[in-house]
Image (tube, rainbow, N blue to C red):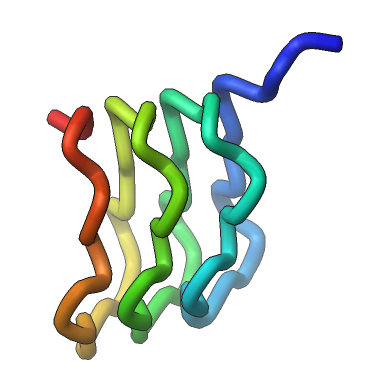
Length: 77
């Protein structure tokens, strides 16, 4: 079985990204959350996504980003 490398969650009315939301997707390289209603990104939201190279949060309403929200995204450009 191949590991998921690309995930598009555009236009899905996502309102917040909780801690550990993407656990188990360690091979993910591209994550798109464009055109949602994201207003809050919790600490540890992208935990375990060490291979992630591209993260797109365009066209959202982000008003709160907790400290540590992007921790571990070392490969992200």
